[in-house]
Image 1 (cartoon, one colour):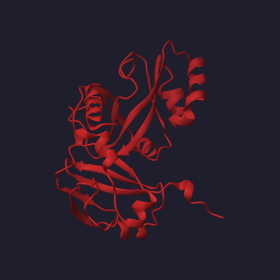
Image 2 (cartoon, rainbow, N blue to C red):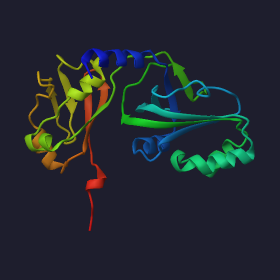
Image 3 (tube, rainbow, N blue to C red):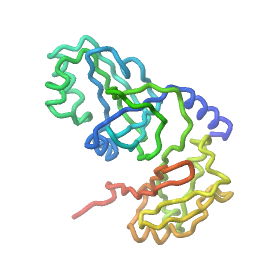
Image 4 (cartoon, rainbow, N blue to C red):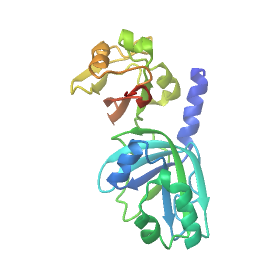
Amino acid sequence: MSHTLGYLIALYFESMPQHIAILKREYLKLVLAQIKTVESRLTYNAIAPWQQINPNERIYFKQSGGPFRATAVVEHVDFFDHVTPDKLRKLYDRFNDAVCGSKDYWFITKATARYATFITLREVLPTSVGPTMKPSQGLAWFVIDPVTIPLPFAVTLTDGAIKNGYISLSQIIKQHPQQCLTDKLLTLHLPNKEIVQTDITDKKTLRWRGWKQLYQTFNMQLDDRVLFEPLDSLTYRVHFEANDTHRVSF
């Protein structure tokens, strides 16, 4: 993908509506762990996100009474209306393995729901940054105009990156040119609690040279990921995420 095409795609996505979803802490933990892969909204009235959300739109997840914790992109949406108790039971059977809701949620709290929205998520990443919003006043979903704020990103490690101790941001810069990370001094809060400052080289790698030691300390392997969680526009908390398919125990 050329830089120009990538920039146009980024502008297209920025022009799409975005969303703020308020979730309880226990559900947010499941979203971030990618155990809860579908977000559900069961409502008596036809309110957002019913018929107001589409694939490729971005959702910012805010903890109820707390901070923003995650962001994701919509992979797929299923809408249902004229929900009856029998239909609700069928929706529970179809979706709840991915929704991770309790039976009380489905059959007591949402027993009178008439509209159902099921949103399949992709590109789930942690973030501490979200859109400015007014007090929710009891609402738990907001459709907002697109905002340009720092996005989290993930880098999948190659054998070369592990052996030679580097992180390449070339794909990230192509995918998210609106982030404008180049020519900037970034502050990184590392997994070992160290805080470093670095910039991006002409080869689109992070200039800081301590990655090889960190990879060894945390036993990072091929296809593990380095997650960058924005704390503000140029500050990121770095997480290491193991690809558990490589961690086979005998």
